[in-house]
Image (cartoon, rainbow, N blue to C red; front, side):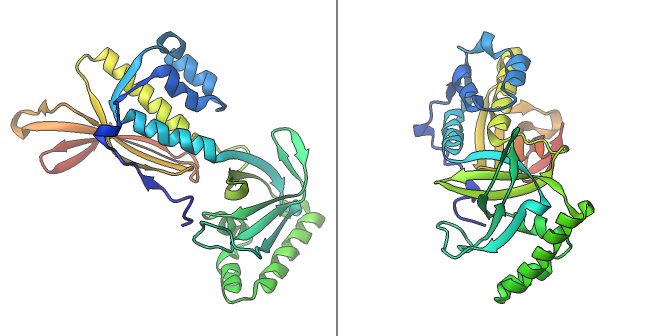
Length: 286
């Protein structure tokens, strides 16, 4: 996996955290998010904007996601197969596990409702294999590039591109999910145009914290702490633990943990799972 896109664990230092965050500050993560109005309405955040969410390390995670939003600009374009060419990069790209990723060129594409032309981006994650699998040639193409026969792979890809130009059955219309970092563009995923819903690490964190805040207001005495997790521009994992041990009769004391995760690279991947710890055993619950 590329270095700059690796999911990194949170450093949760009690001395560096206030354990509190104002609702209005939390909502700044969604300033440019398309679902800001829905979140605002669902949680009535205008009415609670001056309230503090009290969760251990909430401010630490907030700062990391704020950094991600500032340094990794995520957006999508739409394009047709006949407008896509693939080539090998000549100059190495810094901070990538593979310093010579393939380059996707879009001779024509659509961003929002505007038609644009001539866009280059580097393929990361599994994007090139997703593209190759359109023609059931991922293993074949990767092998050719690995042994220095990229020209032969290019010949096959150009054949399919020309086929898409002449026969609309082979001209696929897809959504290409991009991320801009340090002045460079990267292709992180390819999905269908109409059936993909991207939540985003920022959306997931905001909704999770607002849900927990609502729970604490409705159930006096409930207290929570973020105890573990990791983050990249596309993936979030977060474990939020109930700070109170509760009586479980003959089982002794129990403590529950909410596991929150999202992965923009997987369609429909947004998960909230409750984990209940009884002694040394873990149980999943709803």
